[in-house]
Amino acid sequence: MSDLSGKSAIVTGASSGIGEATARRLAAEGAGIALAARRTDRLEDLQAEIEADGGEAIVVATDVTDREQVQALADATLAAFGSIDILINNAGVMPLSFIKNLHEDEWEQMVDVNVKGVLHCVGAVLPTMLEQESGHIVNVSSTAGRRLFPGGAVYCGTKHFVRALSEGMRKELAPHHNIRVTSIQPGAVDTELTNTITDEEVIEMFEERHSGIEPLESDDIAESILYVVTAPDRVDVEELMVLPSDQR
Ligand code: NDP
Image 1 (cartoon, rainbow, N blue to C red):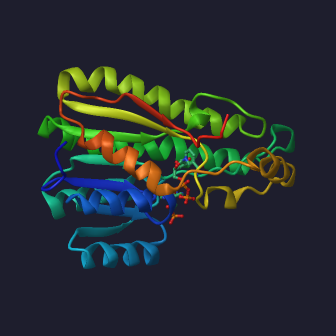
Image 2 (image 1 turned 90 degrees about the horizontal axis):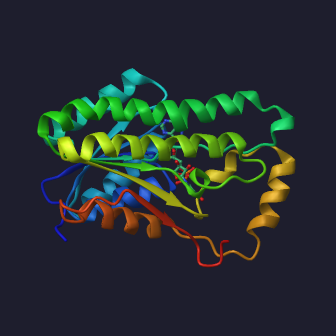
């Protein structure tokens, strides 16, 4: 395993949860990090923490649903670090709801962030990675990218998309362009992700479904991502599903 000195990584959704933990972990291994999200106050706190520990980070206010802002994120990363070696395509939302309750605005939000946002990030970094003839894109899918559950039809659809996109990208990019692509599929992780659920019936169901399960910590996923991006060049982890031990 090599460390990440001299490399740069963009982490979207770095203001909380998995993204925050991953940014912190990759910075500790020596990567220069571009911290991206909308809540810049949180990103600035994380930047200060990373710098106090001897690391390097920039803050780029980014709404991933806005293609121009995402392009500006890629441009700022290249300007600051001279390369874009790793993209952690992590920003996502999960306002679960039962289809019959017609939360159409939330369906749209999930498609905008989890599908289009992911594509915007891919589109913004790929020209640089193709020119470099190297790079690693880690798309954060979910167990919801492999399994369906009531209340999750749209969310699971977006995460199935992320998984399919990753597999398709890997087939084209890894053998011909030395760009590795990985889909990470976490099970339940203790983050702020469920805070945006507004469907009361789903909130009730979710509490029951997850009672008795000790969720993963964000650091557990950060550690998995570190393994993937520090594996030797000949190793491309196509998919990695990481579950709490007692989650079925
Ligand atoms: P959090 O809610 O803690 O983090 C979500 C992050 O996404 C925040 O940093 C938020 O930042 C960012 N985000 C949301 N919308 C946008 C946007 N429009 N533009 C830019 N950033 C945005 O949840 P997690 O850490 O759990 O989620 C991270 C990823 O992990 C998601 O893709 C999620 O689907 C996936 N996942 C999570 C699991 C879990 O159990 N927690 C399980 C499997 C997958 P801000 O609001 O500041 O913009």
